[in-house]
Amino acid sequence: WEETGNLPFSRAKIGSFIQERPVLKNPFLEDALLRGYLRRHLPHEAAFSDLCAFGERVANEVDEWGRECEITPPRLVHFDPWGRRVDHIVTSSAWKRMKDLSAQEGLVAIGYERSFGEWSRVYQMSKLYIFSPSSGLYTCPLAMTDGAAKVIQSIGVSWPVDEAYSRLTTRQPERFWTSGQWMTERQGGSDVGSGTETVAAPQADGSYKLHGFKWFTSATDADMTLTLAREQDRSGATTPGSRGLSLFYAEVSRGEDGRLKGIEVQRLKDKLGTRQMPTAELLLDGLQAHRISEEGRGVASIANMLTITRIHNSISAAAAMRRVVQLAGDYATRRTAFGKLLKDHPLHMQTLARMEVETRGAFLLVMDVCRLLGREESGVATELDAHLLRLLTPVVKLYTGKQAVAVVSEGLESFGGQGYIEDTGLPGLLRDAQVLSIWEGTTNVLSLDVLRCVARSSGMVLHAFFTHAKSLLAGASSVSSLSPAVTAVDAALSELKDFVQVAATREPGYLELAARDLAFSLARIYTGALLIDHASWKEASSSDTYAALRWCEQDLCPVATQQARRCYDPNTAPLDAALVYD
Ligand code: UCC
Ligand code: FAD
Image (cartoon, rainbow, N blue to C red; front, side, top):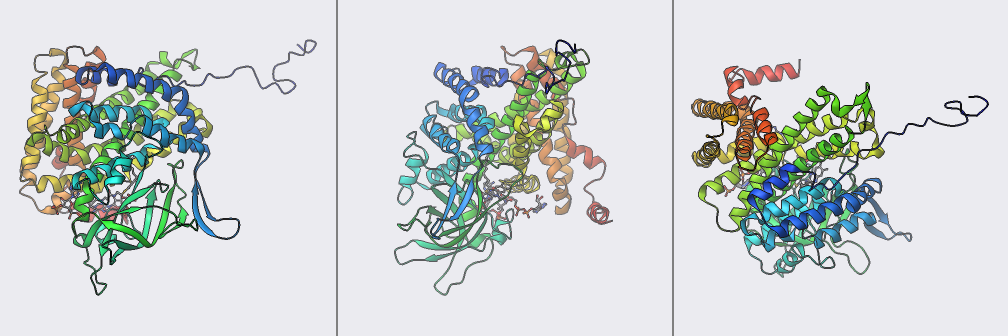
């Protein structure tokens, strides 16, 4: 060896083994459930060929742009070289390409063109699902843009927002606008009613000047925003609480001196994830705005935006899970340990299969909410559909947000140490997933939203839930292979019914403590029913059946389990507090 110079590791040789990387393939073609779901519900050649072509583009072109967004994060330039304040948020060229791509591909427009009628939202969200993990977080501005278009559509497309609407929903890159959603102030992001200090001073021309401080504003390079503020009366007084909040539309523009009009960008947030995208603190110092809601109806009017952004959030969560499972599956065909490929280790496959079950459940739950949204928007929704959409929107957001963190974290581990190495691109998936349960309403706040919508509907919302879940099970009653799953969901529905009956007789604090478990129960039961329904389709595969069975083996109704353990009784809250501060 010495004579030939082939000594291992000699003369700077670092060994000859190089591990093959996991390869991203066309995310549409790789996703059996997505294709099966669309074949069943949206069997249109045009949709399939568009999704297939887009998937090819995502794998071969766009994914690299997403990496570029990550490694070239936005930065804030406060002053120009001559000392003039400019507050310029410098973004990467890849981020700008994402904007053009989004317009060209109709990633917002599809929802408003409605070429596929009531299935248009499912089509749009399928595209976003393919795009999301490669998008460099561009799905964030798209979510808010879609939400703003929805709000404008719901209040009426007329001056002063008609031009904005046409720009938010266009496919022409040079006209396309994105929108911000500025709700959070320093005192409160959940409790917006108490936390909003921004005031709106009426102007002689009917517009307003906004003065306040917005603590979190994402994708701050947007062209416009919707935001909340308190209208001042002639004496400068405002109404406290939610009832004092109105919704305002403002354009983000610059004067001839190059300065932002009425806005100072204080700083960009230094974030755990979502680093591809700017999130700024903004001082609103006389920002010109137009009130677009009735006075005092700001929260109710922005609720349409929340519905849309929460659905986008859920799509991103399911997509992150799908991406990590795809990459982990591919890696398992390339990595060897203990003499065989990872894919040949049953315990490793069990781990990936459990991730796959979670991913399938999340996908079907969020697609069902998109289906309901599409039905509502095309005017074919029944009353039951409307109740389900209201109930399931917070449910899907809060449940998939938690699933995404767990599944993506497990996914990183399946690459061993490489899952922890930044330039593989894998850690970013986890860092970006962590925000999904925080923004657009935290898990607890959305659980309380579930309670609120149940409470305000005098039983109608829960009735819709039980009726639809039962009808999904009924379709599968003749499929014997699914019967253990059907029995499990049926039993969970009965437990849930019992819980509701008992809870109705208890003090309000009881329900508050049960809120999170209740929301999780709704998610697990409904998802179980959807998996069963999909598996009972005549073209379903044996894996569809297996996934349904596996999902339904878990505790589908944790709220009943915890109730039996007396976890919501009046003595629990003081005991919890004592434990925390022990
Ligand atoms: O985080 C943000 C942007 C992040 C970036 C975008 C990411 C998008 C995904 C990207 C994926 C990559 S923006 C900030 C988001 N902030 C929140 O989500 C706030 C969380 N807090 C809540 O949701 C609270 O529940 C509040 C603020 C809505 C509670 O306020 P109030 O004032 O206590 O609420 P009320 O009094 O219960 O409700 C006021 C009205 C009522 O209508 P009326 O008066 O007609 O009875 C409610 O029924 O608003 C109605 N309402 C709703 N309607 C409240 N929530 C809803 C709802 N969810 N749906 C329909
Ligand atoms: P808090 O309301 O202080 O909540 C703290 C904790 O208390 C949470 O765990 C919450 O669940 C819990 N909690 C609160 N109330 C209750 C209750 N009644 N019962 C039980 N538990 C409760 N906001 C915007 O408006 N626009 C943006 O573009 C935007 N971008 C963001 C980007 C990023 C990266 C992040 C991290 C946040 C962004 N936000 C944005 C803000 C985000 O929406 C808020 O941070 C979020 O809604 C939570 O509000 P908070 O931070 O005030 O938390």
